[in-house]
Image 1: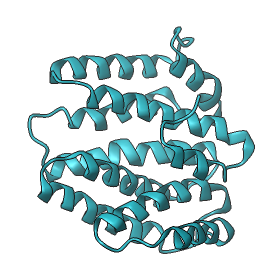
Image 2 (image 1 turned 90 degrees about the horizontal axis):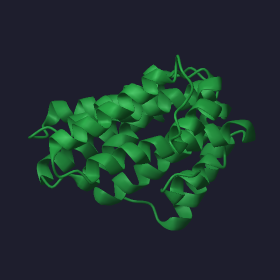
Image 3 (image 1 turned 135 degrees about the horizontal axis):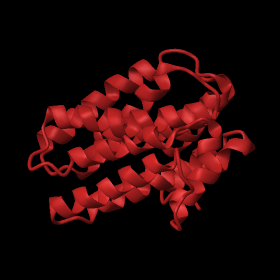
Image 4 (image 1 turned 90 degrees about the vertical axis):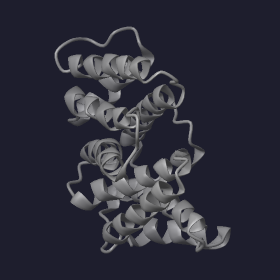
Length: 218
């Protein structure tokens, strides 16, 4: 079971082997929630589907996983890493904000925190790392993804600007070795954000930057 984003596979290859499957499962869950929102034409239907996932994830804390591949993978690989189903269920709240009639700056902030922040915080727990900057990097990652899908240019620009600020904070100091796979995921998003803002490094510099982060944590 792997994420639909090939960049994730590359970046997560930096992770300790024992943690890779759990990290990949987290991104697969995120892909599943994203698909619900992006394929939903009726907000109420999307909310109902997200509510099902919220309840199913929460129940993983007290009952066996049902016959659903993503939930079974979470129970097998993610929960043993100290991540609760309840904390993962909160990711649905972030996605649900996008089903509102109007996306505004407050929605963008909530989405960043509830989707990206929670996802990266869960991943950092699996990796045994506590560092608030990891959650901030996750928020930036989510904001970059959002900027690609909103049709309002001003909101897209706002998402990019907020992402840029978060990346500045996240990469202002050395990252713990165990969390550098997540740093690589965020760096890939940072490259895309820079490209949208007119300042992306070329392919060779991207590879060099990822290698430098993996080696030094900066």
